[in-house]
Length: 141
Image 1 (tube, rainbow, N blue to C red):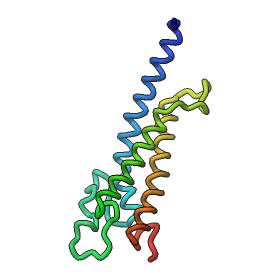
Image 2 (image 1 turned 30 degrees about the vertical axis):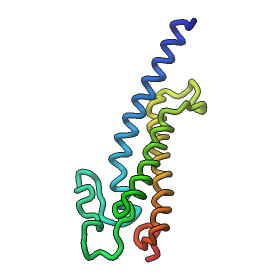
Image 3 (image 1 turned 90 degrees about the vertical axis):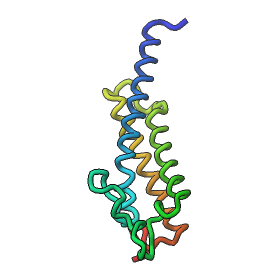
Image 4 (image 1 turned 60 degrees about the vertical axis):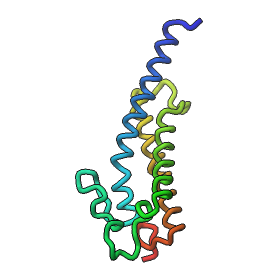
C-alpha cells in the first residue's frame, strides 16, 4: 500500500505534467505560423499580425507556394508530428531533472518547446526538399 507522501508526490508530478502539456501546446500553436513564415519566407506571421493572411499560398500568380499550406498532407503531418513530439517530451518522465530543479514545469515547457522547434525545422526542410521549394532558409535563391 502506498503511503501518503508517495501518493502526494505522484499527484504533484501528474499536475506538473498536465500544466506543462497545456502551456507547451499553447506556445507551439502560437509559434507554428511565424515559424512557417521564417522557414519558407511565405508571408505567414504572428497571430496578432494577420496569421496566414499574407501567405503566398493565397496569391494566385505566385509560382512557388508555401509547402505547408499547399500540401495539406505534408503540412498537417509536419506540424502534427512536431507538436506531438513537443508535448510528448513535456509530459515524459525526465530523469535528468532529479530533485534539484525548482520549477519542473518550466523545464518541461522549455524542453517541449525546443523539441517542437527542432522537429518542425527538420520536417520543414524535408517538406521543402520534397516539393522543390526554392525560397526561405532552405531555398536555393
